[in-house]
Image (spheres, rainbow, N blue to C red):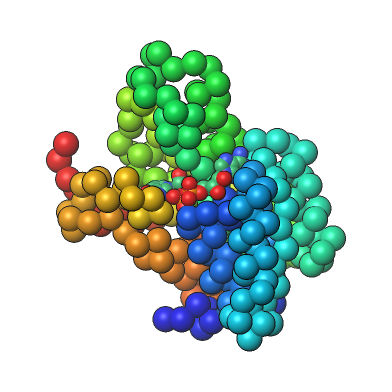
Length: 257
Ligand SMILES: NC(=O)c1ccc[n+]([C@@H]2O[C@H](COP(=O)([O-])OP(=O)(O)OC[C@H]3O[C@@H](n4cnc5c(N)ncnc54)[C@H](O)[C@@H]3O)[C@@H](O)[C@H]2O)c1
């Protein structure tokens, strides 16, 4: 099924973690399907480059899509509030929020030691980006959705939310917390037509290192295999999806350690 068949024409989407990986791919697909996309990321340089490239692409012009970008650190309440304010100022509404920004603190902070030796900065990074950031962004964008009478919030979990990890303890704990947070969003959103769901991938080839992680299928996912599923759930075709965490892991959780 092509993204264009998922009816994103004219929809306004806020995407965090949009400068790379799955957030970037989702931004491209949404714009190519005629959406107006606000790309947010803390990596201002690559965000600007990627947004300009999408803006200039043939797919964007052909679909009448639109893209704007805003450097944003989702750990900051002010930045998160600023993101929804910018989107509302520019487009007048927010239909979709995709919280792709996240990461494994051991890798992102170059910390190759177990939890009990990690400095506070590493622990804070893991919790703040993976949990607090998603909370701030949902808190920022949801009032517009409630006022409009509809919207969709997509959070990114991980199989690590089930597994735990000695060097990524905060990553696992935060992703696990998102499963529960999704339910709360769904409960308070449902009376207003706002859906919330979480997608928890196994290994995804947004970087080569993920190829080595075991799955039943013997491989990691292509980013498009995850993003296509997310966009399906976010579209009208996924209208019955709310409150749940969807594991898409090639059978990783069936593999014995
Ligand atoms: N790649 C995988 O194997 C995998 C597996 C399971 C879950 N996930 C989850 O999927 C999501 C996307 O993964 P990916 O591999 O595409 O990621 P990625 O590392 O390619 O991109 C993450 C983006 O988030 C941005 N970011 C980091 N901190 C930020 C902050 N404070 N504010 C705003 N932006 C920030 C980074 O700059 C980066 O552009 C993440 O939440 C990740 O935890 C990924």
